[in-house]
Image (cartoon, rainbow over all chains, first blue to last red; front, top):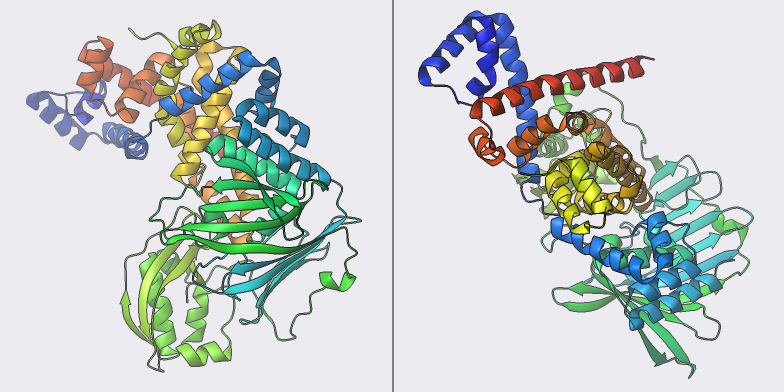
Length: 446
Length: 181
């Protein structure tokens, strides 16, 4: 077989479609001809890229859901030409530009009557707070005092969470729970984890940060309604409106939203954070002022529904003390390193699996080699931690896993360690891979 | 015999909206793979893929080159993915998470030109590539389905590979130039 014949038959050869004799001839030619071998290798590489698409898309079945949406929209377009314009402009996305009036219109057209009425009450609430200058929210959340702002735990006690937000003359905010506080002072955004004496700085003003978004959403009702209705439309969340008599004897409008995280029940992070939970959100409005009066959020847990958050105070447009937006940091605060640097022997760490990184990390603790341990961290170890974890014993390291809600590439490594004190700790070490250095770093769980 | 993309697009525009089903069926898997190169998890990818098809349906009348339906669909999907990433970025303000997301996108950048290169193939080549790799048919099955001799299928594949390699090399070269300037 010469080169021309080999090239002509190469795909059939790779696909295993040649007769035995032809196939042997093709193989024999490839062994002696570097150019054809290179061509063969190039085709094989391309095939490998293409073959990799197969398993990833094997279960994809979008035809029916897409056609249902197309059909629903087509019906709406025929019913009302205004819908055509709205959907063409925003699709089902209902961009942030959509005002409350447009939302009322859409919900009346899309939802059954009861849901539309519920949406209308929320939209009026959004209009009522459209020109806020400031807001202060205080609520009780089932959480752990030093954990993330969005962390929820149905078995934990209630802790106070507060948000102060100034909209004018410039945006500033503060979110606080007992052992964690974040402040955006108009220039930068800083979070302090008090128990760890650890501070994290985002060197610019941001609308929300550090997992405080869920609380900002409640404060910014105008956006909340857009988000909630967007989700209700796109994900089939249910909205409902009822009336109840408040403690002051007056009738209140109660809007209930059944929110779904979309995460499978067996996902490790499901129901651990606000936005990753299946919840029933109950908004109570005063029908006269149309203002939001309270919010209660219930977690749909396996053991039954449980109240996890209750907003017990809302102050609209009250003057906020300037000191609220100042954050006093301890002089010896430990700063989170926003950037990781490559190490001279970086490749050794970049090539580790999550399990290997976890083992190396704990091994460094066992040897009390703090320099080595800090290669897996974004902050230095304090003396108390060193005292606690020095000379620990690794009992076991399990196979890593991840969650759809965790950062891309992040892994959880199950571990059991025994501290010098005799205490045995069983937990999952959260490891994230830093994209600049390729190194794993301890993101929690230890 | 299946109609071409252009013919299906024309039929949809003429009021046969049910025919859009064929276009969804034809491109759902490569579109999913394209979005999987940009977004972080299956649920997000599925949402974005649905949204892309729906937006495409709503805008079909704006499509000037009907034969370029798939390439145009990828453009829509790219915008939808960007919107989702922006929304995710707002949701997870933790700077490291954002960094990881951007890293993830950067890391996977090398993956999704493949779908764009497939979109640039002439339809007859694209059809064989999609059937072979996204639908998982053997060459013999493709030959039966398209009523073609087996040899024609392997030759079409061979030509499609050559065109894909050319296209990918051209994109890589363009990207290298951009990165060096």
